[in-house]
Each structure stands twice: as structure tokens, then as C-alpha cells.
Amino acid sequence: MSAEAPPHALLRPAIAIPFLLVAAIWGSTWYVITGQIDGVPAHWSVAWRFTLATPAMFLLALAMRRSLFMPRRAHRLAMAMGLMQFCGNYNFVYLSELYLTSGVVALMIGMMFVPNAVLGRALLGQRVTPRFFAGSAVALAGIALLLVNEAQVEPLGGNVLFGVALALLAMLSASFANVIQAGPAGQGTSLVSLLAWSMLYGTLADYGIAFALAGPPVLPNDPHYWAGIGWLALAGSVVTFPLYYNLVRQLGAGRAAYNGVLVVVIAMFISTLLEGYRWTPLAIAGGLLAMLGMILALRAREVKSS
Figure (spheres, helix red, strand yellow):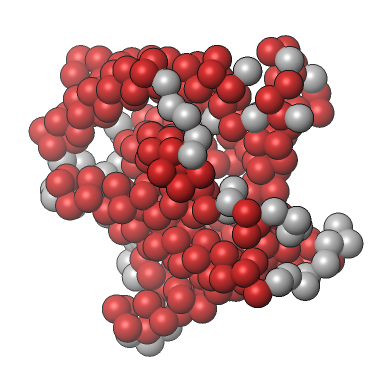
């Protein structure tokens, strides 16, 4: 059904409104994360985020009258998704923002459609076009220029290469979770219920990692910190994940992935305003190349799937 969505589908309010809402929320979360790692161990901030998000997702499933019962293979899938998406991905993202500005991290994660395509080919037999690889190469060249600019400016921790490695691990973790949820184990299972169980398994892993790597729980007194936790948990997780996956079902993966381009634009804009990101000629060239490459690559996937 999603493959037959007309090109003007994004103009329909029922699609345009959630599309813009998801992009606006996710675009803002990258900067909000910077307030979660200021004086608080990143691992505990991740754990607190999903401590709030997990019961909210279960309540959402109940409110939508979705069954929380899942077969054993769906629970195995949920465990894998939880470890990859709600544990590995977010822990790596939070740590990477200690070394890279939030907008650049968002841009790197926005390139997730590249490993998505490779893993989709390997695990699900999905085809990939040469135009997709060409566009991806252009985008990667742009990101390389942005990272060279980061290394020259060094606005945060000074270890840009380590930040890049963490962001890449975050991207690969999330990509693996995205691909496996589209496999046969997730079919016939309510998406909201699958997300709820995935968050539960991921949260348990978050607690284990936080205790092991950061020691006893850290509970800040700053109300701004907890306001950020609320925004990331409820808006950035519980609201957006169901909306986005519904967009994927209505538009198809190709058109829905354009949401990631808008997320990057918003994240870079916020980073410029609030983090003082410096748009040197090198950064401008890298940003333009990255956005052009992303659009070319996603357009190639859309043409192939339509």
C-alpha cells in the first residue's frame, strides 16, 4: 500500500502535520541532550529518559487498545531492538555529544539510511540502486568536510575522532534495530506494543550499563534537567516513534526518510543559534554537499520503489 502513495501525499494534512511535528521534535532533541550530559553521567541520563518513556509507551498501547501479548519470537525481536535502539544507540549518541556539536551528530545519524540499505540488502533482500550509492558518496564527502571543520574548531571535548566513532556506533546500532523490526518476526504484532516491550528491555540494559560504568544513580536537583528528560521521553520517544512508523507505512520508506533531512536542517539551525556553531566556508561546503547527497540518495530509493 505504501508503495502506491501518490507524489503529492505529503500535502495532505493527515500526513503533512505528523511529518512536520516529528521533524520539529526530533530536530530539537539533539540540543536538549546537551543539557542531559552537563555534570550528569550520560548513562544515567539515558536510563532516566526511558524510565519515564517505557511506562508511557505501555499506557499508550493500552489506550489504543493494542494487545500487549506477543509470541516468543516477537519478544526475542523486542530484546534485540531494545539492546540496539534504546540502549546502544542512545548511550553512544549521548556520549558522542561530549565531543561533537549536536547538529553534526544529528547529521551523522541522518546518514543512517546508508547502513539501512546495506543491511536491508543483506538481511531482507531489498534492492539498492547505483544512484543511491552515488548520492550517499556525495553526502559522505560533505560530512567529511564538516568533520574536518570540527577538528579545526574543536568546540567541545577536543577529541573529534572519538566523537565520530561513537556517533558511527550509534548510527549502526539504530540501523540494525530499524532493519530487523521490518523482518518476519515483527509482522502481525502491534507496533506500539513491540515498541513498549523493546523500551522495557532496553531500559533494563540501560540500568545495568549505568551501574557498571557510572556507579550509583545520580539524581540532579535542577528542574531544567528533569524538564529535558520529560521532553526527550514523552515528546522525543513516545509521541514520535509511533507517528514516524505510521508515516513509513503510508508513504513508504523512501519518502518517509525525507523526514530525516528536515530533522538535520532543524538540528543544525538550533546548533547555530544556541551552541554558537561556526559556519566557516569549509562547513558551508560540507553542509551543502551532505544535504544534496542525502536528497539524491533518498530520491534514488524513492524512484526505485515506486
